Length: 180
Image 1: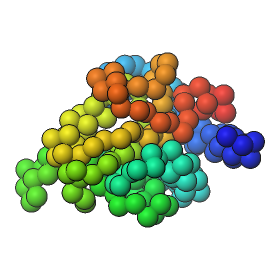
Image 2: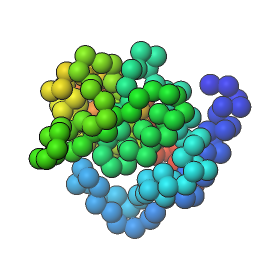
Image 3: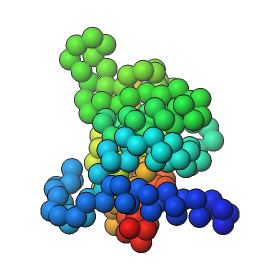
Image 4: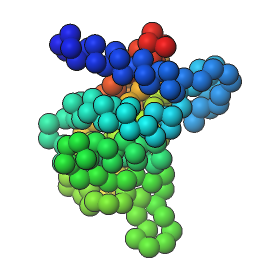
């Protein structure tokens, strides 16, 4: 990364940390308890933060991505912003197939036989990503990677139940803690 890009992302990290970092006791989706929480809606709902974050996430997309797929619910504003930034079509991944209408788990695009990159907000263990991966595989998608705004997990970003799936974060928990 160039110095200008690093400085720009450092400034964005500071802004996101200021807007979204909450201290207290929080139960995460994984069931873990954390004393620091990154409230994604506090930065996803602010155009001044969402737009540069979408730009930074766009830079991480694998080159052969045909469709970007946002995971319900926090990945939806991100995938929409990234779609506007890149011109790539967006799909929306539900936690489970709906029981009415199309009865599909992935809406907006047919992902069968297509190269798909997941878009997620904050990943700690990747449980939601693993669930979405199974849904996408069932629909015939070739899932290339998951791009996330924040990796809050321990160690190298990875989804343990899908270890071959690259996890490409814009920021780590440490980045935001340093910036905050």
